[in-house]
Image 1: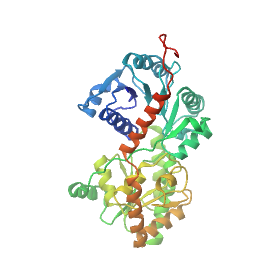
Image 2 (image 1 turned 90 degrees about the vertical axis):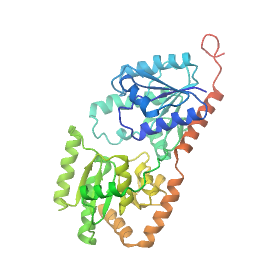
Image 3 (image 1 turned 90 degrees about the horizontal axis):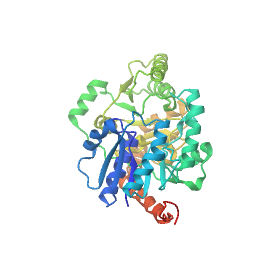
Image 4 (image 1 turned 60 degrees about the vertical axis):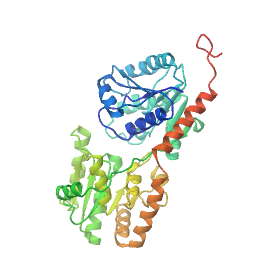
Length: 395
């Protein structure tokens, strides 16, 4: 069974979406299923280096500058990739990033939609782009593909409600979880000096988008310092690009930090590498992840895997991912966040229970399990496919 796998989103950085596509491609090839990976032509050599020598993998470059919704990408979905699937003898095309427009399907098409956040939070997306491009495009993408995959039951129901996809068309295949790096004393010492971590710290991962809820988090942290005597800092990771939306959000966060009197206690770290993130997770007093909307929430599991207790939101996908291995809070109530952080810091028995439950919870998520589920889906789709006749239509 040969598969065409869409890797157009890759732009030199391996984020969660790219990691998933990489893992699926490697797993399929290792299990005897050839993969034709399509990427931006300008990234082809980087992609080769990323995979190294992998039997069964073919890399094809596409003459595009962006993976964004566009007529050019829609033409590639409908014509080039469909013709490529036929010429390669591929059983299906798997579009791994949120949208695709195979108007002219010649083989079954799977679309992985990780979330539909812009239906709830526009954030950096302008009103007209959101209302007149993104929303109708997502509805078309979900209609045009044979099967939609998403990463949580919450996202499945959100897709059905907001995008109008029939529930029976949507499969849930959770994200996998990478193996974190172990503690590195040298790197740890550098991070302590860089971010002033000598008195401990609370960690937040994910940046300063509106839905990440940093303004309320800062108010909650101020309450922890003033009313409960916490002596450490709050570290918020994530790059601040200088784009207009990011600049606006940083100014809003800075204003809340100043109003809370936390100027020297709240640290915006900017981009951190995976190794740096892993060492920050290992050393944190706790991870707080009070997002207003997540389709999954990988940082919750990353913290649990290294034995760091977690406070997260009681909304969207986060309770589903955290289970009973985290303290859940109303993310719109800073006082509730403060109380939860204080409980973990002062209650050793609670902390130990959350660490133990968290490690067990994280063990349920692995890339091998995720990839096996994708392969099972591929095989199911191939087994029910109507054989083609000599003219390419049904036999």
